[in-house]
Image 1 (cartoon, rainbow, N blue to C red):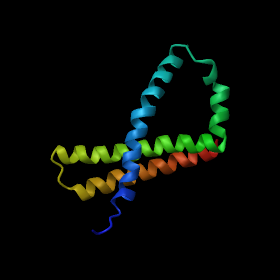
Image 2: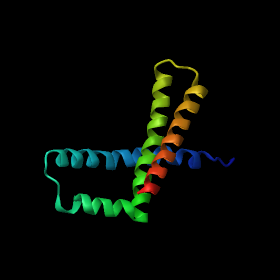
Image 3: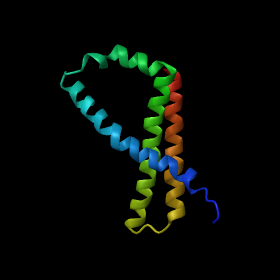
Image 4: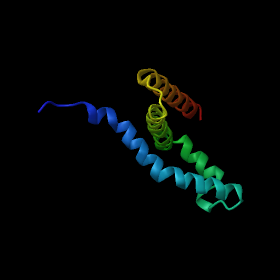
Length: 113
């Protein structure tokens, strides 16, 4: 049987879907709680800023955002195809370049913190 590179290529999409499934609902709930003035003590601005400025925090934030972007780009590609956009190469190129550009913007923003 021939070896395939598909597992390596599909990893960002699968990991992004897992990240979205586990972290995005929690982030939405915490954002709503903060908007209503019910911020848990461990999630104060000072503690979150300290987390975002350390190396591990930057890596975690980048991982959550970048993997979510890659998974979303793939899902949008599939949606475009389902809606009848048969220029799959064009859609894939545009969406994956957008995910890459947004990932780079996130990385640069985190480096400035």
